[in-house]
Length: 261
Image (cartoon, rainbow, N blue to C red; front, side, top):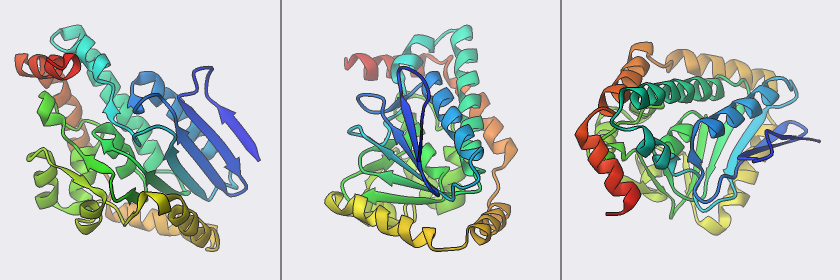
């Protein structure tokens, strides 16, 4: 067994138990994602990559949410200025690099969604192979409500996973769905009572652990060939974030959300 702690602030913790890596999101109160969170996630992924014994990565949270998405206090500080828009585009690029790294892991990745997974939090889960949600979890990409867009792969991964109709429903309609509906539309593979979520993920992990790791790695390669990210789509997200950060509409909506006015 090994344990990796990424810094004194420990926004991310990583524990490796044999072939299973448990990556725990632990930024209070809702796992809001900022640059430091992403750097710590990248460090955890690097540790996983360096350990060839890891065949399964279980991503969970010890907070009320799986992740509420990008830190809107960070966005609030940047919106409306050229410097802030450039900084936000760099953060969007960091999101893409880290999430692409997660998606490219040879290990099977599982997101255990016990609470809300919104915006960048859902985009994190979308970069995983498997998603299990509690019935009461809330999932969505509601960035348009604050005048922005899902800039961490959401427009691309959600469309590829669920099709353009469901993607338009959630992104253009600003809809947030519960775990049961997420399973029905193919956003997650399983939805389960919150009290049974951990046991369900335990059972999935145990089943996967009994399969052949080399076969699983080759299967992932083949699946990714059929569903690779479109670089043009990723770049459109990043440039779109830069443009939207300069609009008075985004400034007004972000300020209203953050100040609750």
